[in-house]
Image (cartoon, rainbow, N blue to C red):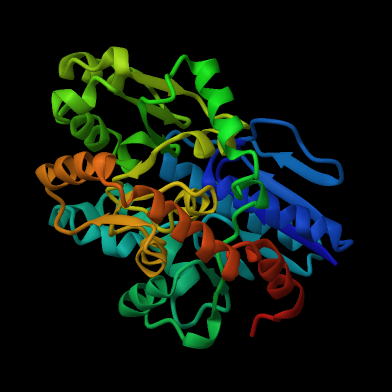
Length: 372
């Protein structure tokens, strides 16, 4: 079979991008041909993956998305694809991988005029093209909650939704030599074994709540804070957060890394995963932390937050968010003897439930489910 995959941007360290690559590679392993259309590609191209980097004439982000939709439709008309699979919303898709949150829901929190701006109209039109009742697009969902949200705004028929399990990589599972891995990484970073290492992982620092995390770290009681460090890994502009660190007086206790290939080593070496996101459609790193025996402190808006509750693998910051609540919860978790138990609970849950098969299930749907 021959598939066309499309997304607005590829870089190696984004969550959506990792999912895209794992699904594409699974399709290749099944013997299919995969053509990729994107205006931006960073990193190596796997063997047998046919990538076309499109030159789009557009000045704005929403303009680029509209131009991408037009170009993909043109190219798919000229080729006989068995399915067109989108990791960005647009018309003409056979399958859409729904890693983004519902834009219509986000518009509700904006000023009344936002929906009629060029950006608002473009994103709403792209979303409607996927979810409107008259569309034929099959939708690969990551959480059941998303189905309810989209159906509220678009009345999308239920039979077009396919809810996928999570899809973490097995290298996130804590190894038998966890203690040695922990000591080795801490030696490399110059972090003493008895120092609390708080970890944040995720590109898009504003959305992930990096400012919230930094303020909570700065608010730790002095006896805890002087024996703690905050490690932040992700692809974004560090400069505004360096400035915030200086204002908060914690610049010497924070380390920023661009996206890395050895994320498991950090998960195995930290004491807490902190993920106080403003919004998060899934939050795969929450489950990766569970697999690594790492307790989690995250906002309850994360799509995968329910796994933390079911596994008893940490604590959730309630909605509505209050900075003081996060401050207190972080301080409490760092000193709570329950922390080791939370880590063990998460690890056991991951080993007893399917949190690995998303790429295989997605590929099976793309191969076997025919759009109406």
